[in-house]
Structure formats: structure tokens, C-alpha cells
Length: 247
Picture: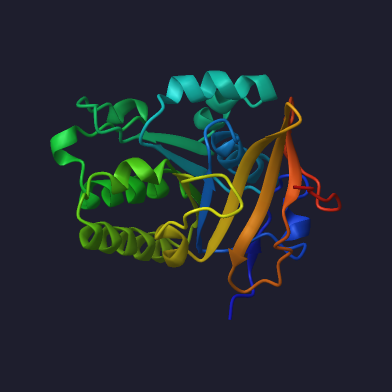
């Protein structure tokens, strides 16, 4: 039975998670459409962990350049370079299009021919060891799964990733693109493999953009699984657990 939890530190989120947070050592899927704030949510989870809970974090990017993420997060007042210097945060770039290796600067890049399950796991474990990380983000896991066109191989590879991440003892967020943002959407196989699923959805209502936060499942917790509105402000993501979303 899970008895230890990791506060996300993101306003409103822990209220929905039984006032506890994410189950420690588990792997959670964070899924959303373009512009829904997935990267902001994930980085806020790491930033808050490093600055408020003394938990270092590793950010594995399979798509966006670390410099772009650092620059974008400054609008929230998050100085990521400072955390990196203090060894409270580490970026690992495993984009399939990268071929250079820059381990001396703390940036690991692996070429497309080597971009496979073993190399991904090696990079993650190395990052965790280097800064004694307790939180891990993989963004987006979708890029990794595309390396396996065969569905059986894809599911097997994801099982291995989740198994190895759990063995590290870290609390992990896997970021994925949501296939359809409507109420009757297509479920993704990753949702059945992870211990928890958080959805970030957006839709237009009378020309106004509505953002919807929902915890679809979280094993070990009596969650509030109702859709709740959220916002992205100069402070990052904030969820409103007492508000109601009207379709």
C-alpha cells in the first residue's frame, strides 16, 4: 500500500489529490493538447520540488531545446540556470535529431541511430545519479513511442520504461500529446500502463478559451476526478478545485 506522497506545489492540484500529492516513486501520465501548458506544468513540478521541498529534478527533453525551455520559463520568474548551477536541476536532451555529446556541460545528446530504449534509460539513470534526483520528467514520451511503429513493440518498450523508472524510486511525469480534446476522446495505451493520468484540455466557448484540468486516475488516492478549470498566469499553472466547468 502506498503511504508516501509528493506534493506537486502547484496551486489547487494537491487539493484534488486528497491534499497529499502524487504517489512517491510512481509514474504519472500528463496528457494535453498543444498550448495546454504541459511543459509549464511539468517544469513547475520540478521547480517547486527543488525550491520548496529540497527534491532535485531531471528534465528529459525529446523535442524542445533546453535553451528554449530556460528562456520560456523566465516569464514565470523561474531561474533554471541557477538551479542547474546548484545541481538541483538537470536537463538531458535526447532528441532523435541530435548527434553531439556534451556530457561535460551536463547536456547529454544521443544521435538518431542510438535512440533506443536502452540509451534512454541509461541517460535517465545517469542524470538521476549525478544530482541525486527525486523527480523526473520525460517530455514528450510521444517522440519515444514513435520509434516503435509496431504496436506490440511500442507497448513492451513503454512497460520497460515505466518499470525502470519505478526502480529508481523517483516520482515521474511522462508528457504526451492528447489525441482529441473532446469529452468523448480516444484513450491512449499509456493511460493503462501508468499509475496515474492527468489531463489538460482546452476548448472554445463563445469565443473564449476554457482550460480544463482533470485527474482521470491516481492509484492509491480517493481523487476528485471532476473536470476543474485552470489558468496559466505569470506565476505558472493554477487549478481551481472548487469551481465547476460547464460544457
